[in-house]
Length: 221
Image (cartoon, rainbow, N blue to C red):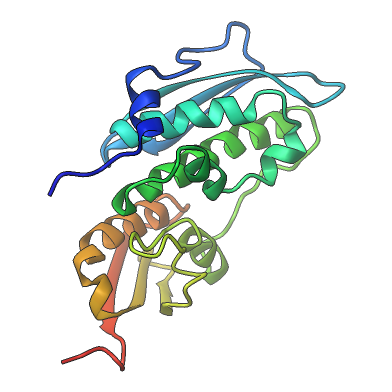
């Protein structure tokens, strides 16, 4: 089945805005992995006194939605303060693009995460934030799962309260995650498993991610 894109998504894919790298950028940050199919790099020019994003550009490796969300993110970011950027949500991007296909919602999450990563890196470089060195524990895994969306509902697995269990084997760097899955979501199981593995695998100390889906009690047999 062909994926249907809004006119705005097509527009930003065909003619993306702010492509490239800001000359003399104050910070550059990359999120994602080309091995998984999506990656975005943002370069920013930030006024140190006002903390306003004066210029922002991107480079993208990925699909049409990846390019379109990155393009729209640059438009929404320019002129905002770093504090405003930290309050941005992936829904701000999808709304501005008149929606995204369910299976492409993760692109808006990646775009916002990459932008916030650049802002955090800038704050660390200017002594305004502390470099985070998270340990492998349930809280970090839980936090990673807040960026994994159910393509059908557009809600994160945490928001939907479907994360049934998390187990960590520290010595082996192995993480086991059990997700409650209802009938309507079975067709998205493979996509969700890939997203879960990608986000959790990025955590320090993780060597292997095991995902198991458990059928909801009210699901039909």
